[in-house]
Image (tube, rainbow, N blue to C red; front, side, top):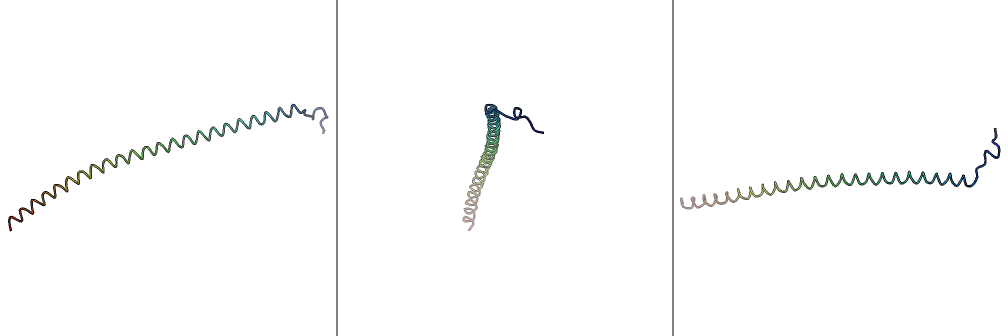
Length: 95
């Protein structure tokens, strides 16, 4: 079953219009995919920044509690030194 020459022939303007439409559709799909990829990258970057902020916050809390503990230990050591000095003085007077 063959088509007649008139029905099977496509003119140049029709071919160019079809190719133009095809390229337009491919271009729109490309832009859509590129936008989606960029949006995904932005979302991942925002998640990473949020995780980093939480990590910095935990570090700051840890540093603050460590500083408090160091100050308490320093005060305790100072008190122990003074007590040790007192005990040494008592022992010297006993001799």
